[in-house]
Image (tube, rainbow, N blue to C red; front, side, top):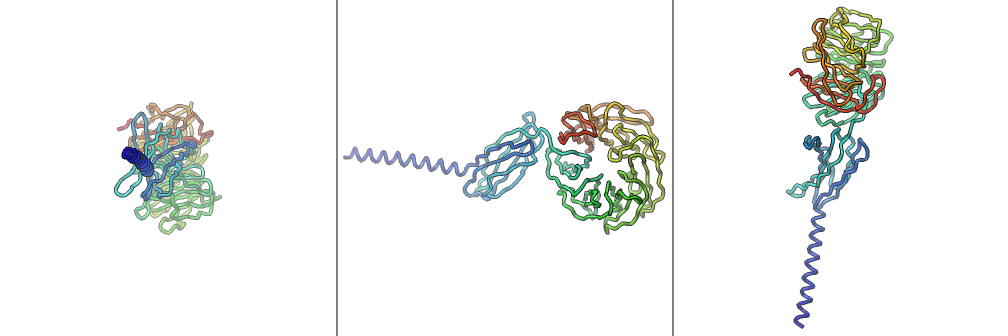
Length: 412
């Protein structure tokens, strides 16, 4: 009888031990975050995980991995404790990505397993112009009817904002110590936005399709409009009121200084010279028999460069043509060195940027190699931020895929 009771007690002990082990495993499972990732497309990554007891919220983290090096740890989202699904819709261009999820339970930080997946091979948009906010590693990019905010160090799209119609040449300005983005549209309006989140602050109704804007430090907003007369209009930022109108042609417009503005149409270049109070002192026209490209024009203190052939002119009232940067390939965009004497050109059929330094009528040049085929350029100190195409193209037949690159200008 004693032996029987001992056997029963042993069985009971073993059963209880198994039950405790099972319960312990269940508790471990309920307090562990298991993360899974599925690439839905080249622009969407689906993340799934389980809930855990006592969690208030979940933080979703992302890192980039290139050549076995990880970088760019970033909190991409925070969600409540009932949410166990998230779609990363703008994951960056990189070889590999690492995701993980964290949550605070009491005083303990719980972390999920890390999931490694392929990054995006390219980003999807069609760029026409890029302006940098270098202190934040941000680029504001003009599309056909959208503005894209890009983190060029992370190579990731942060946000997009669509506008009602085609967007013209954009510009940055400052008002009441705040940075502003000015977006001209063919819906007869200029939208004044916060460049960091693309929210619209003010709207100017210019009564005609707006093709370009240029903002000086006096708070003057120059707008090129599709009017039959007085195509250049000047508004005051503080009142948003029209204060002057000037004759001209529908143009891309670019400020060389607060009181000097270049207007470029398909057949005419004009320099407008103003007084401090906005009165027109002089206007110098220089017609050309060959085509210009108002949207493919850049201006420095020394030179004007325009058209896909890279025609270079002096940036004075004489506007003498000095050289043509390329007669064998299309050039899609240009950027200047800090001193304005060196021109960087995006070559559409060679994975290179052409670097041309001009002294008098002499031009010396070299090539800066790139991974993709350069499309749009902007300079951050001694580096070029480049939006490239993964395949060769022409400025008039492009694809909507972009590779973000960063290369040295070689001018340190």
